[in-house]
Length: 295
Image (cartoon, rainbow, N blue to C red; front, side, top):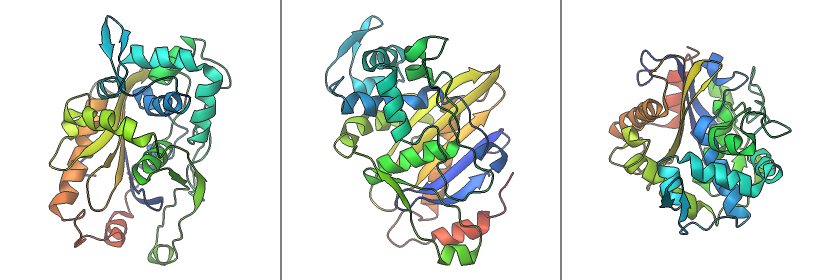
């Protein structure tokens, strides 16, 4: 809540090793019907392109007057690269993989009020599959859906049902539930350099801190509302944590600012030794102190 400060939005924090939601600030937005994913959809499209061998990670393609590879395109969120990739794959393949990764269905298990978002059944009228693949046109993504996908990338390919224990009894009885296994383990090393590059020198540089973070920003407007997304996981040794930030409304609602908020969360937890082997702050402690946060 302190990291989000005065901005209108939601912060969702998930343990990627079991699908447990540790905190959700502003559940009204976090459990809404979803928002346009903006450029965060590029992670799904990149995985689809690699799965179908439509791209090779190290191959540089000449697009928009310059040559770039996948790492550069992800780090700088290049729209030409992903619009072209989407057109090369075609709507059916983009849709097939997106739905496999959790779009259009609830990410959680028995989370009251959660909505399934929306994935279109046909290419968007505005820009077709190119706009869908580069800006998420006509898609409604929820913060939980992005958190579930980021968790699967962080843990090597397991898409968990997200569960949100709200009492000490639910915490004690928590049991991870696997939704499905994604065949992405061989592809993760191809996309993480671009996601880490986003933080180290690209669109998410405001999230940069001492430990390595991999993530993807998104900035766009939907129905005249400014949106700023950032989905990330810390990519070093020790405990991993997925943080998703969504900002809605007002000109400060941009992906780089969302990245800065996520970076602040990681920094604050690092100061509390949360990621160290000693685990001075336990997940149970975090949950019990944040259970109130329905801001």
